[in-house]
Every structure is written in C-alpha cells, then in structure tokens.
Length: 157
Image 1 (tube, one colour):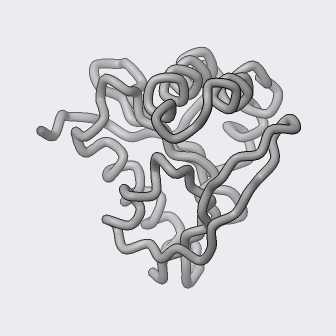
Image 2: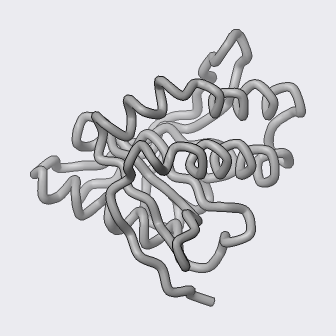
C-alpha cells in the first residue's frame, strides 16, 4: 500500500523528529540482524545533535512527510554517497524508502555523478538489492568500539 507523502529539504527544526525516528527505527527493525549491545550503541548516535545539525546543514538531506509527520529521511554526502536512509517502523513497506531513494538517485544524476554508493546494514541489503544495487563487499565497521557487519553497495546511474 502506497501512502501519500511529500518530500522536502530537512531543516534544523526537524532534528527532534529525525533523531527520534533514527533511534526508534534501529531499535525496532534491526534487532533480528544485530545484537542488543550493537543496537544500543548504534541507536546512541541519535544523541550526537551536533553531527545531525551538520548533516542537515551541509548534506543534501531530505525528509518524507505524511500529514506533517516525518515518516522517513535520507541524506547524501559528497554528491554521490548515500549516507543514511531510514523509514519509521510503522510506515515501512509503503513506498516511502523507494520514494526517498528515487529522489536521492535523481539528485546524484543531476550532479552528474556516474554512480551512487552506500554502506548498508544487513537489514537494508535486500531493499537495495531489489533496487539493482550491486554488493561490492561485505565489511566490518567500527562505531564507538563496537564492530558492525555491513555491505558496500553501488549502482550505475
């Protein structure tokens, strides 16, 4: 079921909703792929408000809204690197991530980059594969001293 959403540029006023959505999505959707300790460390990144404000100000950062509620967001770094895409757990499988990804891919093409690249979680990998992303390699990344398995994916545009 697709719901009616609007996509717009994020503002610093969106910060509380963005960080709450980030934390909640990780806690509620990634627990089948990561340990409780990993989830807690990963979700704690929501507390770093300076980093989130920097992303909103410096990156191409968009939010998806339904009835003035932020139901998803995505942000692009360096013009071609998808650094984050999250959808509220109550709004998943409704076309929101796809709409955000199409908007991000369009921006990459407008900026005339030949490909888009991202590091994606085990949880997100099937979504990106369905969108014709190719897995370059499986890797272990460290965040706050905790190791996380994820995948580098790319797509030629």
